[in-house]
Image (tube, rainbow, N blue to C red):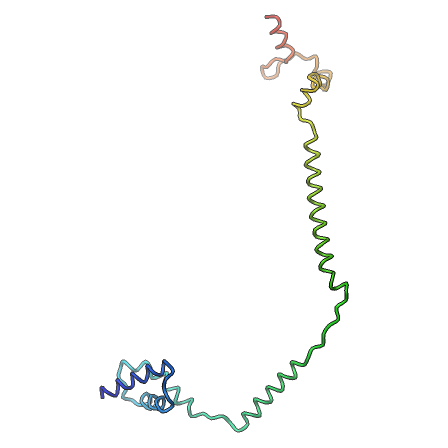
Length: 167
């Protein structure tokens, strides 16, 4: 019996490689439908047991008619579709939309650039001092111009300049 198992093992290998004939598959089916199956081949019983069960089924006489009915239904669903007319406006509409987007992006970038240019034209405090050193003094309120009081222990600039001149 050991030789029969070798033959069955060879048939199983050929089956997995899709090289068995119908007769060899029938031999496998008969072998695995029996009760005397060695333990190392029991795992294949479900596979080859289903082959025999499904192999006895045949197609009915009305099989061709049912398949043809399904095909005709599919053909009816897939009726030819008429072409849709597209106007010139519909054809160039994406171009107009793209041009509008470019115009929006350019106008926003130009506005941002102009805003940055306007900020760079505002003179800084150091530029005012270079042009007119007394500009800060003339812009001060009148009450502060004559004040010689100290703030947090620091004397007014005029007071410090007078002290330096006196020394």
